[in-house]
Image 1 (spheres, one colour):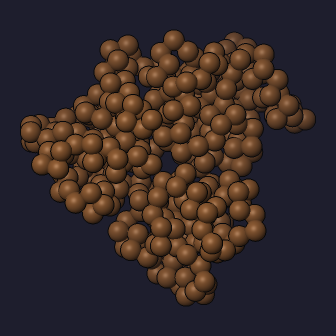
Image 2 (cartoon, rainbow, N blue to C red):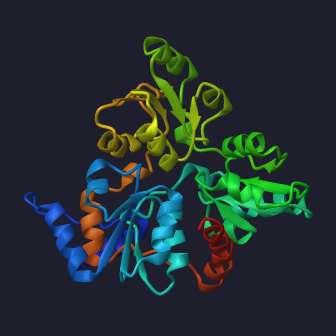
Length: 332
């Protein structure tokens, strides 16, 4: 069996094409060549490694990436992000080829909401509408009335009458924040993102004390004790906008540290400090293990061989598309 055939054979087990490349391979040049040859587009999340963000055709948060996936004219979509994002792109583009550099690039938040368990949970509240954060599986989306992202969540919740009972899943921290913002009392699924749960309030307060001129800005997936310290709470795109437009020149940023790459580009004159994690690590920040599973080598091999490809069963995709399209329509 040749190398490629062996790599394909091991794809489901490994999650990526495990093929050696030449040491001198110029991944940037090769990826750009393949994009042009194959009419491919690379969509990357702000939490990807810097080199992937730099080579992507579009970098954004979950809402922006869903919108971009919905309108692309490319024949191939390479999604540099995590599985639920590529799955959403495939649902929006059932006839296009959607690739993910590493199939095992999952999401702790999506994993915290198993479909069978959520189905039983939903059955306890038959008179409730279901709003789900986009960070969930296609199966969870099929049980939803509408999907939201952190960028549009308040707008989505407020689209329902104030007396409408709502289940919000899977993020309890985002759900708690939305209850406070909208005056609702939504029933919350007990799920969370390990990246945002990892912030240390003690270390954060120490850094804030050392930098009294710094504003804390935070993503609403963070626990309430972190959010209480923040001057501004918003999505990744919202955090970027705030840092860009604020007159302040120093920020402590409480979200996944990958956002700092784009933030530095947009506000190079400002000081940016990543919020610290409980665990002592090399960056003294909170990084998503799953987001970092994608590498330039995997991106190159995935585009060259058009694998791994994301597949979503037709009926599942059709059912999951309904709440996604409702979100996109409300987000125009």
